[in-house]
Amino acid sequence: MSHTRIVNKRKEVGLTTSYDSWRSEHCMSHPTTLIRPSERDSSGAAIAVHVLRPDAVEDALAGLNALQSGFARSRAFAGEAGQTALLPDDDGSIAAVLMGVGTEAMDLEREMRVGQLSSSLPTGEYALASLPDDFSARLTTVAWGMGSYRFTRYLKDAREPALLVVGDTVDIDGARAAVTATGLGRDLINTPAGDMGPIALAEAARDLAREHGAEYSEIVGDDLLEQNYPMIHAVGRAAHEAPRLVELEWGDDSHPRLAIIGKGITFDTGGVNMKGASGARLMKKDMGGAAHALALASMIMAAKLPIRLHCLLAIAENAVSANAYRPGDILPSRTGLTVEIDNTDAEGRLVLGDALCKATESNPALMIDFATLTGAARVALGPQLPPFFTNRDALHEPVSEHCMRELDPVWPMPLWQPYRAMLRSPIADMKNAGGRFAGAVTAALFLERFVADTPWMHFDVYGWNPAARAGHPKGADVYAVRGLFSWLAAGGLNTPMES
Image (cartoon, rainbow, N blue to C red):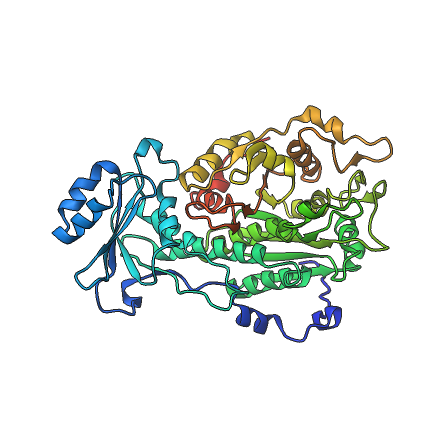
């Protein structure tokens, strides 16, 4: 591990409490909504939940008593997508829950629909009594936990969530790990920049390292220049909290090496090319790439996958001050390539460039980066579907298949080499932005210059849900992580990766 200098955090920003006490006070993780039968508080039966397609409704109603079946019929429950019915017991309590998911041919959300149910049910203990034949009990369990998520740090009152009692046929530890990782990423992104600056984000990574026994290091402030990370330093030098490169190392050296890299811009003003009010409003989420990287790292470590993990977070705030970098400046990089700054609002690719270069130096079998990188990706594919770039064509199909199977979809996009011309500079090796066209592609092509010939995947994520949908509450969200974990757990690093 390279030499590191960790700045005293109290001295740097005048903190009056330690991160551990801050985390305890604000609860950056949520109690699980998935419980084993042995963990129940109640001795009575959990409330049965029947998830039904239209063709299964009559059989389900036939198994109910007259009061309950009559109640369901009076509400015209027919198993259509989104229909629910809370059936009464003799004393007026909830006896059972019916949820319709529509026909299989029309049901693209499948198990995730149960996440919509868990977010709306009254506090209590529930159990899945019946599912459509095409539903996975494991994925339904994960969906329940994902839909139960609430960001409560700044709320005075928050109701207790509905709990799902999980039977022995489901790997509850794996489901909890997926839900916990998603919750971690959502918490980090939802937290406003005033409370999630470079120091707090680095401490969240340190906390995760402690939890799983990983090695932690960070290079801070001017030490970035001394240790040759000039682009990370340039982007973050104008902020009141110093930029930094954070690294976690975990696992056995005999296992294949995986590098996960995250963009951690804790707030993006746009720099000198400053954003307007609407563009700046959600820029607390510009550290979403780092949140995704930590979420995937947490799943890998929790499952103890046979992987040698190297997680790198390029952390900075893109602020404006007298020493901010400017349009027209030329920055050196860790690779030795020079970059002319066309737009200071294209800063994420700069910090990632240095971090990607560092990751290549350990000769990983694969590098994966996450970044809230371009508005062009949202224009092309919207908020729910991250574009997926790779310099190994053999990765497109298996990764996409695993992500789709986990209802965590991605969409392959091309590293169209002729568009490199858009990044040409007459006075430097390249520019950091390519103009109006193909913005997601040119951003990926910029990053490709820093990975050499190392196998690499790039995910341009949004990190946000503009509106609530099944399993995905409005606000911060994590994309592609569960699908990638599924692929890695199935031995994905053994995929032939010849260039």
